[in-house]
Length: 377
Image (cartoon, rainbow, N blue to C red; front, side):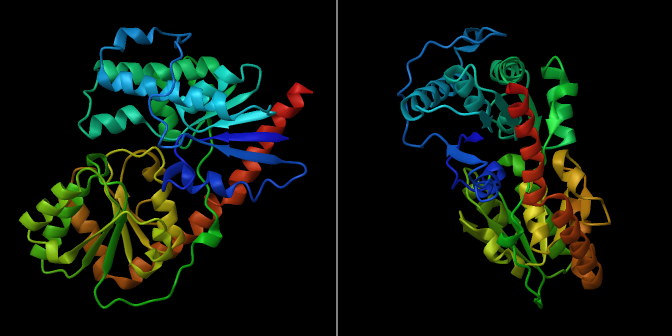
């Protein structure tokens, strides 16, 4: 069976779907399976010129928005690149971004296209203060879900909570499947260690949606209570300077290390003690599963896919978003009790191995792919 995995970002892009898809190729072995990856290089800009029409709504009612214009140009570019680079046929295409799915169905109208939706771009833009909820950009991006439902042969997402998020924007939410992300256990190597001062770590893009301002305020509260720690922030993004300034204003800059972008944080994540990320929105939250596979205790917020991964007090701790005092309390509890911290980390590691293994995802995908093959025969 000849498969195409259509990504948006190049496979080397860190996080999210790129944590899983590139590792699938080793699991889909020829001659029964042939798998190819496809994505849009970052250097491709302003190449596409196709006239775009959708089946379920008129996107031109939103074309006065610069964000919508940019999105549509990116779609045209993806379409241009697809027509230029892909000349062969496939038995099945699995798209992992709305633009990828729409472009693939345009170029390969007779080929089954499975659409996986891994995150909400419009929610990210709202939380990152780029667009307004209910505004034209928000309405445009939400309209794409119904267009995808109309065009794709099957839709999937990464968590039950995100399927609920999509429900108001499609006609048949009950037909959306859930495939949770999976991770290759060989990438993660927990290492027994002891730190005299507890080491906190977070890994994310530095944007408002991740709630790092809340984390810094929680850490300032820990310092006010006389609790020792070091906070490691791995990642880069548009608000790095703002976060560094906030750390200085809160008097915790000496306790905080900003690493910037790191390609493989899982290589040294096992040397930390607690993973914490007070996100304001997460469709799944791949980094929590990755941290659990490194045997770190987890602290997250009661939202989206995080709350599906963490059972409070069993394999991690959950707090309400925006509550820096509750977050400080959860961190204090783990910092003060090494045995409790170790117990939560061990339970988290076991759950991650059982629920988020790459082999489990491979089995699910093979079954789905074969269903399409059988129906076409």
